[in-house]
Image 1 (cartoon, each protein chain N blue to C red):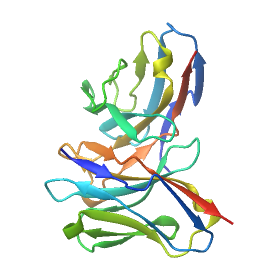
Image 2: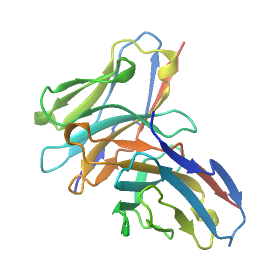
Image 3: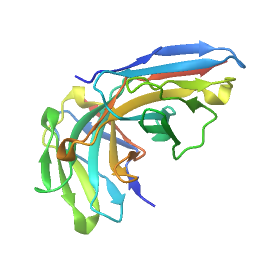
Length: 114
Length: 113
């Protein structure tokens, strides 16, 4: 079973509020990712990190920001939430292990901005 | 650019029937390919993966997939579908020098009893 956790699972928040979505993994993986997924749609990579103090923008532009101060922690922050940010956010982690490389996903945070 | 295409948005099959979900990829080098399953309100669970070697790979829950380089395909199959297999299935390719997973749009599977 994967040891990657996201909190909260569900969040309903008002427009203009600052929010932080938490993601933690206990597997010691260097690589971590944030994906955004609208209902019934594909996953879009919005941020990724190769390791501590390394963050990159993903394929889909996002107003969110991320930080990677510790290996196990990869929080995502929205400074001012808007209804257009309503979506599911999935965190994942992986490490290069040759033929055993795979990504492990958290259960996701479903965000609703009202 | 690297991409993954899943041509079928929705598929409905009867319980006990066979299943094939299609996946086509566009990638210059030898692809690392994955199939994930997502149940409602849940994260993604890895079903199987292909890196090299035998082109027919076995996964969990009785699923298998066949890599066909000539067709740029990695179709997922199951000989007999169970009602609990109803979920969304995503094909993905590892890109960006092994640093990013690029997903297809997903196929929603419905199983009729």
